[in-house]
Length: 326
Image: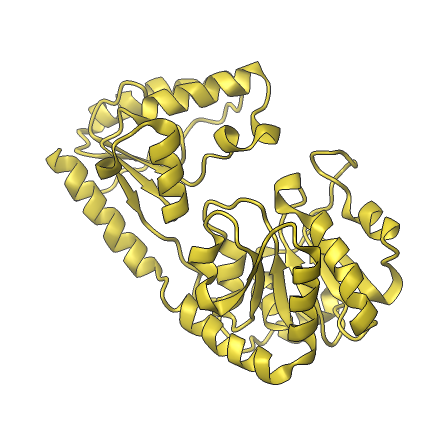
């Protein structure tokens, strides 16, 4: 089965995006004689020209009020929801997202498949030659706890900071918190500035370090150097950072929300997203108890080994074959 990739043009307006998804893409499928089409994000055509597979990574605009947007965004979400019922098959990144799709889109369970993602081969416990340079570039302390991700309200960073402020009472500056990611351009209720929150909690100086944006190629070294990754997100369709960290042998302290228990499994500690005391306790234990951290590191590698891109590819091809038969 030969693959043909159809990409949108250079125009970036919202209207041109919708035109590509709903008109240009189906026309291209007809013109190329495609047997099956795959839309790798939540935007299938309402009138597909051929059996179409759509990947729905998450349904955040339907599930979280803060992300529903204005009238045009809600109209687009309504279009994507209606079009999903016309797809031959729907792929989701997790069982949690599969259940969301069946529940919110009113599609038959038989049309929705879970196809897990995976971490890249660069995420491994073996130290890379550039690890010392990465440590120097981001001015990392000798030991640290790590957060790597966004700062929108779903990511729950304010709760993480409150938990770390409690953990500092026991840890002092022995295991600082390193916060990685492009910081918000302005402080808002949707994207609270973690620097402001940290200041209000009395965190500063040697206890917390904001790196700002990090290059993709530097992430494995950041994970490898951490005592633990802390990821208290309130909702994830998959949760790639915890899997990447575990593939590096780094234990994870994660919330038990949405898909995260599926991904983290026994490779980390699962805590309720609002449990400040529970998150703090987990951080202190992993920072202090080397034997426990070593055991959790072993389990993290074992859990990460259950995910592979080869399996992702095989299951995706099987979905194409089933869609073609339909």
